Length: 135
Picture 1 (cartoon, rainbow, N blue to C red):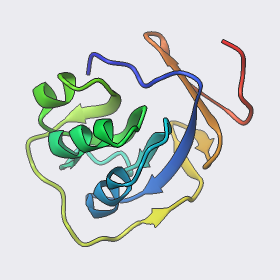
Picture 2 (cartoon, rainbow, N blue to C red):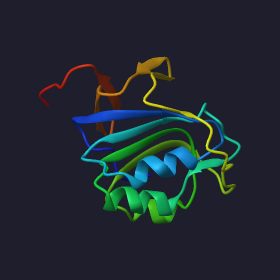
Picture 3 (cartoon, rainbow, N blue to C red):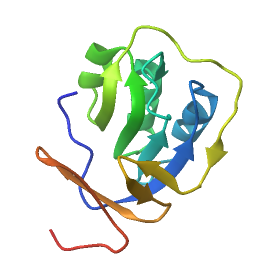
């Protein structure tokens, strides 16, 4: 993905596995400049985020989405004015069972991430902080 998640933004968390129902539900809500951090268990077997939900997220005021898993519709996502980062792209759609946990602490890459923490991102990477920093 070419765009970076917005810097200095509050995080909201979601934990799912090969299921995107809760991801879509979150992105249908007003984002208020937040970044959705989705722990998809690091699965590389299907995409838990596609172009349509990203367009909806952009229109609903989300600043970015970080996915510990795969996305699809990469060209459509890249045309959006919202930061999206994922492990990889995959053409297979996710399950639609609605299984997952909202607003729980997640572990991604050895980092514990909780609702209300702040995400900072640039071309060098992503940093999570418990407090808002001056950048």
